[in-house]
Length: 242
Length: 209
Image (tube, rainbow over all chains, first blue to last red; front, top):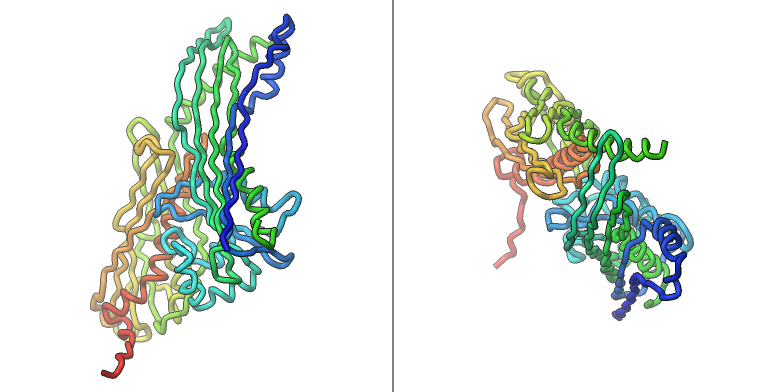
């Protein structure tokens, strides 16, 4: 059983003609100031489910980053975001703290020793004490996160000057970020790869400045975190194929 | 009032950032490590930590960046003690390498040293990462003083840069490098010990022809 799902959302900036009256600029300034933390973000979420999932109240999930020895550069802030969001809110389930899990199973989940694929799981669980310790903690799923957010392009320029009588900036700076993250879900109860969730996010940010710089920052990483968490929550809690 | 605040908001980062870039960075690496989840080996070992190892400090003045002073000594000792507590049947810290009847109670004497410590800053690597490399040499002696092996353990750790907290990033990268060394020691000691006669070779059942 393998099912593929694909979601695509886009939030392009729009300028409606009815706002082009004399009161437009003050209104626009206020709106833009209020929305200063939201540049343009486009996101896409994909899911591939191999087996039925589901989680009970006494089971938990551990979120881990794949090894940097494999070139993975997942930011610690992104992992914190996934952990925090999965642990709270509606349809939440138990998330076992990853640092505690790594300490309690040391040295088997260190970047050099962690299993590189589902085929390494039986060997890991056969090591003395490992399966017992995982079972005692009620850990049902391991979620392996890889990916990062990178700046892909940018341009423009800004000049700032400051003196004892005042200061200010003039110009426009823009940049684009691409966030691409993948989470593989291993079901330790069944000993198999339950599937993957993937999110790709594109964000365009800009800072125009006319005396005061106004940052319109696309929260690319936060959008990727939200998308991945939403899909992961659904992936794990929905017992049948989603 | 408003103009004054704007001036301060613009000028403050311009004044503070260069000062931070030139700051001396000193850190003492935390000395708590988890005990490994492994089957203890049937060995009673003596652990010898030289003064140089137990008080190891690394200092480097990075041109155009900061001066770094990293105190690794306590973490060195904690790492080897913590792994040894679970890896061996018994591990006893001794002040100097035992000899004669004093050594007879041990199957092996272990004396680690730091062979090399290196780091790389984001300003040097043009990445967002702080990276740390540590190479330990673990000498294993027989109770009669014969050197059985000088095992080189290479460890690596990296951590993303955190704004205005370079010491925190360096500490995280160093902790990961130390954990990497501990993991290699816990997982790899058995094969190193078998290859050099500290432990008997594992019996392999050869199927009958």
